[in-house]
Length: 353
Image (cartoon, rainbow, N blue to C red; front, side, top):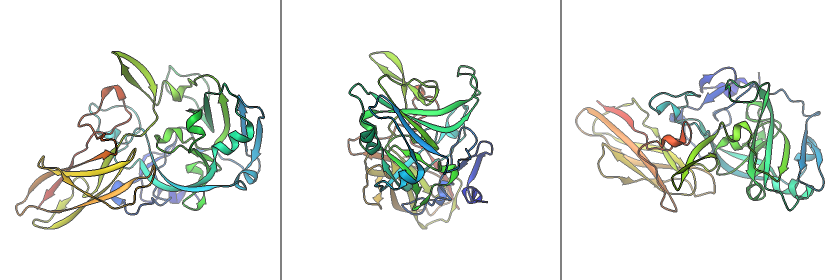
């Protein structure tokens, strides 16, 4: 079956709907293989017939239209590497325990995405001067467990500002050089570079240009946080990923030999990563070497050699990233972020024996 490789060597966080995590310790290359890339779904994966599928663009435009799959993939496409991270990645580390998929480190991946710039379709439609946002609607739908949400089946939909939609958003039909897998959004998904992955709507079927802010369920009651300005808290939709670094090796619980040189290794992403530092047992932060060339909206792998102590014992490793504007990672999670945007420095405990 075509969907079996999507579960290969991944951690099953839920079966129905499928939520699958890449063991972060398997991080290797710059590009995450498709079969290793994490899977996030809210509802059952839609079964879509490409011959019947249509993408409709409507709303505050001069010329609403529909386009078929074959017409879409015939348009000029581009390929870029983009890192996607679930907004709830690292949720398992929150205390006290919270609801939601209990992601550890691996609800993140970096792939090469091939698709048509959204700006091309918006130009074809002729966006009106009063346009403000672009709503992306998927074909996935189902009832909500949340009592405060709308009743009946709800489709997953998110909006992005028109300026973002016209800059770098892609409507992708290929992932790592191959046709999208159903669990990754076949036949079409959005890729919104630099934003948490909830914005990169899968199974895309409708685009609506609107002249008012969209306040749908997944824009307000979910995938939102409290931002304070002048002492006033305002519910704010999630958008840009926060800068962070994660350690892939050694993993938590690893047993290492004494007086042995090892390679501490991981990846960092969010904004433009300028440096990564590593700390052992609260001592001096040491600068890690960045492996990958800097590319917009793609992670950078990093490494640092460490010689384990000559005496047995337990040790705590941490890593932190800093972006080009000097923004780094907090030591504690901001409670106003709820169960999302978890970018705090995470400890990795190992044993030297």
